[in-house]
Length: 326
Image (cartoon, rainbow, N blue to C red; front, side):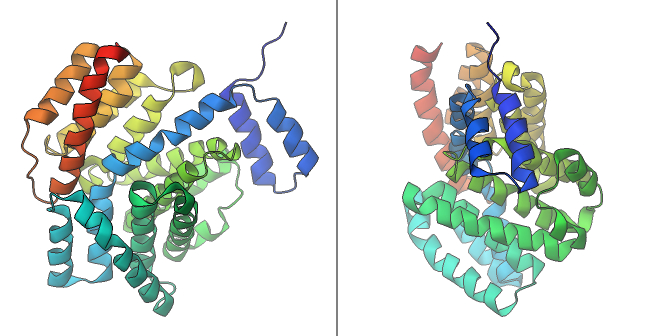
């Protein structure tokens, strides 16, 4: 008896069909039926939500504030949000900021900084705070803003949609350091939208494209936003088991480097390191040590307090559940 196609094979096939944009409904349905491991792929993609909620949004808020307002006012607003120790207060205030960014973009439709800020902010709210029934629409807008941002910053990117993976990776080589903010916004907003639409089986197939964009950003500047890129790549490489293309050793390297670049002050990295890597390889000693370090560390840190509070909450839950997991 021959085995059915793996999730990885399914993803590659779906990507090719998706990229062609000439697929019939019948052919799509037939290909879909062949993918026996799709459930695992969807679970993998859905699990990105929590990772996005914790690991990536310190740089998102900071960049958004600076891009939208500028100068001292931006620094003040950014600091007020990121130094807040009450996540519920921030959650209630972000919708007003969404309206602000929409209005500003409508008046300056090709402004790269504004589009990047819009992509990041809608990704933040859609993935972290919005109810499921709103997340798809919000992250779809984030993705559109991200696509417009990289198109405005780097004209060849306007034709990226539908490229096969090999061509896409080659095209990324043309992006340089001055376009890094737009590339980062493009990748993060795309990832947020894939999470929100994880019930669509083709979403899993797009992950290699997102990972390629993050890898290009890393090549341009690995220190960007205090190691945020290493954090994302650590998560992506650890979310899948090796049989489905995961690379635990690569994930560990990224997590360790992210901790180093943040000087250990970004507690969310240690939480994701424990959740994604230590649990994947069943290393309870590492798992518990990382989480205990988070619980023992002060949450107050310049521009990290809000997300360190969230990370500590996650650490408490993970440490308690570890008794059953291991």
